[in-house]
Image 1 (cartoon, rainbow over the protein chains, first blue to last red):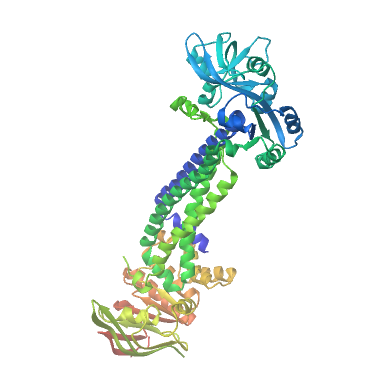
Image 2: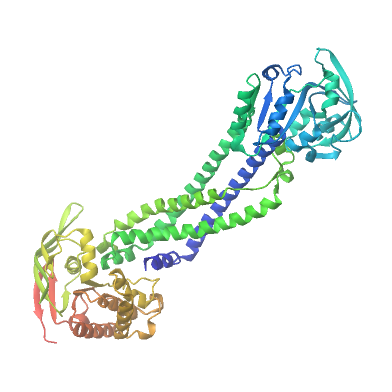
Length: 405
Length: 229
């Protein structure tokens, strides 16, 4: 009976209740949708940063990390590589020779990091082959091929087949130059990274640098995030003279960004719930003030305080849940829709997102637990909000309230 | 059988620190099946007395017993429950629930009393038939005339078979025909249901029907007359 009364009471002033229901609906939809875009953006950034840039674990000679000099090699790369390939938690790994130098075309000379790679291992670990947008990956027959980023290619005004000269220091400290031919142009979501990294065949680079095999970095991708620390600790204990770092140590900002996403979601949620609370408070308070005589009558005929309180609480809940569920449903539909099509922010912001390492096409995504949390918090907000109007109602003196105009 | 008894009942209001005595030394008894009108000019204390008898206000001095319970001493929460099970109210402005139908309005108090659903519906229908609204059972108050709304209010007050019903100027907002119709119904129910009815009124039409007329002037009982009608 109370449920029926409360439900009908909210439709006593349908326009006001509908405005409030729509406000709750739009507010929650907007909150959930913005949260899904933020989550999608951050997840994509995390995924691509791990896959294309950092991997889960990197292993270096500690001196290389201090000086960035090719001479600081990993001597036992063969045994280490074998052990890594046999580790059940490791999905893929790659071994790189890293040299800092200059790249020159007829138009421009600029600083660059040359990555000497095994194309197959690199493809399995970072999926670099999938990022090639023009030309071919390093697997061709061509002599001394080089794969460069689109932004660098644009700056240097080079095309597929163009020749570039790469200059760097070899292991004996002598400056050496070598001619490479652009075989492919790649593009990732991180244009800054694309501009600074070029890829060549490991044997080509090693021939020029030292004449024998030099490995400066091993990058590992694990099957899941939970096993990363375990794998890192294992190899660190096995090779204590090397430096084994997880993605959190390599890029603390990535870890910080993950934490910040959680904080941002909480802030978004709090702002929405605060707006919701004030909107609801206004609506319910108005509805109580409009019904003073009726509430007085209910008290007079014997409706106790618990029931009056319950009725007002239910009215608040009905408005909130109707709008809230509508907003969630609308949110789920839009998130699912854009999760497949993506939202292309390049149309409004150009490459600016790429410049900061984010994908310009964002695929909204949201953990189902977020919906659960939002529902619980919305109910909690409604309960808290209804307390004040309910107390106002309970303070009424029935004999005076009955005579109120 | 005595239903209500008051002893030296007084009520003083402190308006702007200036005490106003609304009721002075009222000692009355009301028996079963009475049809009593409390009359007097505006400000004489009729409504205050009704509020006291209905447990909506507490006396400054004196005592009120209803069926052996001294209601002036019980806690607020107990008083609400006491009202629910013992007292019926009819208000001047009908005060029906606008979102409920006539049948739901009449059932409301019995639902609060947690009676059997089937019994509630039967009794509510029976009461609406008794007040001549059998064709308006599923109609909401906004679609009823003032007289019809007041009949629903009377049916609501009597449906739960309270010890007595207090009616505060029930005919004040009604035209003559509706007022007579309502009084006929109330008299009939008073006879058939044997429920005590106490009115506050200055409507001559009500006074002429009352079997007992208590006159209040300046918060004091100036006359208490019985009529054989």
